[in-house]
Length: 200
Image 1 (cartoon, helix red, strand yellow):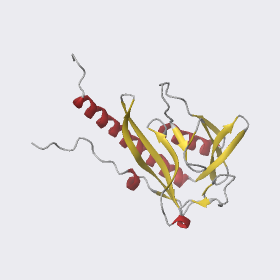
Image 2 (cartoon, helix red, strand yellow):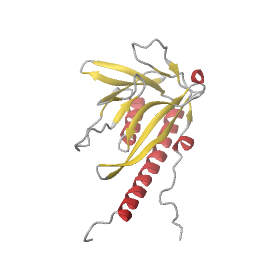
Image 3 (cartoon, one colour):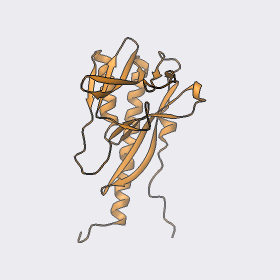
Image 4 (tube, helix red, strand yellow):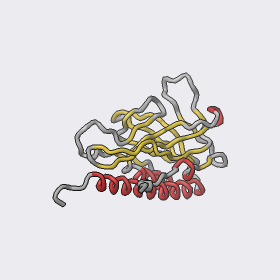
């Protein structure tokens, strides 16, 4: 008897797309040492990059991607993160935008051994681990920067600060976070079926 698929596919890329074409102009800032100018952001979306098991537990890796007309709408990852990042990032973005106060978001280690990054940025390089993000609100945009050192930070990208974008982003983050956690539950269920606890 054929088995039914154990895990349902979640197409985040299709369900989380937000167009920025009617929003204030936003840009991704490449490395300060780059010869390329900042790249305009026409839309953003989330994409499920990988679903695997790390140190015996289900783990997901998701990317926040941008698309731009100057790069033929090819997806370009800006941030990569595990399943614990989306909720606090969405809250930090909305809090910074609505209170007009800069928000420093510390990325706490999960306390497990092993070389596993929780958040990386792809704007200025191939994938740099982040320990703190700074969200700075301005009149029309929120600037997202990486804390490089105690007194230095590097601009990564901007997101709109309009009511319409914040509502769309909050909805997108809620739907995506729910889908990701449902996928985690599916993965953990499959793992239990394949490797039941001895003596249980």
